[in-house]
Image 1: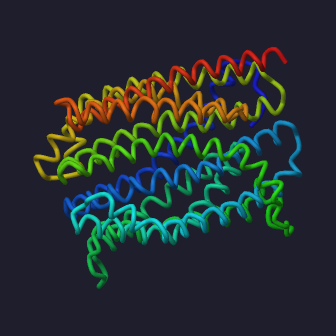
Image 2: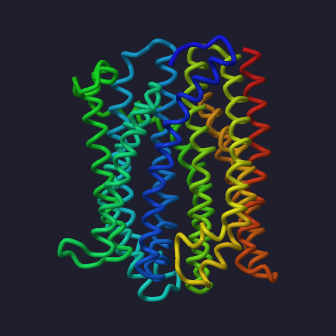
Image 3: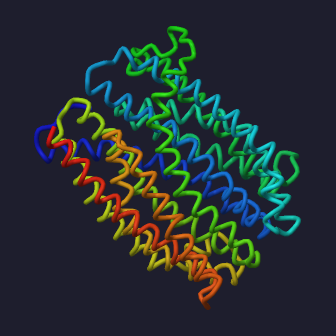
Length: 449
């Protein structure tokens, strides 16, 4: 990254950081997409089982994984302030923290998983698939969290093409492993949705091995000497990283868990409804990768400019990112409107699932505008290291407004399952409005300094 002086230079630098992140995000998300898609072609029970398992894992994994996003603004500030010698210590402590958190997650799963699943009233076969899928996934958690730390370090240096390449290589590995384990190849028995969990775990370890190899051998990263010295575990540094990372992680958890809770509430409906909801949510989540990628790019660039005390440049990047996000959201919404039937047919051959999924996909159109505003603002605020307000806004918007409204409509109106979708739309809209107000306050405060 480098200092820019004109708007054209900023657009070029934003795009150069953004497009590899977007490719990487879409590619990594595609792993979940193919887990769901290929499980659905095994059977509707496998699709529903993976849907329930993902609904439990995604908010936990995304929320706790969000803690390690803190490494990105920390490293970006150090680079902007020309304090590069401190980076190795920060990253290694992040790896230690990732290992500790992964052990906590696995331990918590051993204690609580069976109780959670038993409360959901699932059909026996769907429950079995969900449990086995999560157990298979658990052994890959340490690799996933360590990779997230390494990715945060790589991206903070502006070398986003590296993580893009890792993602692009990992996707065909994951698809091939899905094919082997889900459908049973090379003498292995067909495992259905459970095989998707095994494939994901192996893929996570491949990703962390690739990242470590590049960091050790590429001069752009090896010059930071991450592994040239042994660093003792520092609880003080953990505290500093958690001060930034926990609000980020909790905000991500609150946002993703609302979608997971809705998916779990959908379990009171039949298997077709569960499957159709998963289809629509899975595809709309893929479209979310666009504003999410812009958010990640803004964290890097705004953090870099704030670290160098160039407040005007930081504001200009935030405006550019938001404008780009809204424009792309309009394009994505148009694509979804025109091709909803074809999208639904990708996931299932059953006419009932396709018809209901199309209905849910129409609601996903309204997700796009709120996400296009809210996600880039979250990334900008992280660049400023302003993370607490985002967490509070998420709690109020999703749990205080969106979920209660959706539950009421689903239980007390003819909308039934569609009521949950309307509640989610309401929560996202409130969040986008509140985040806009918070950004104005933060930028006005920075301008006054």
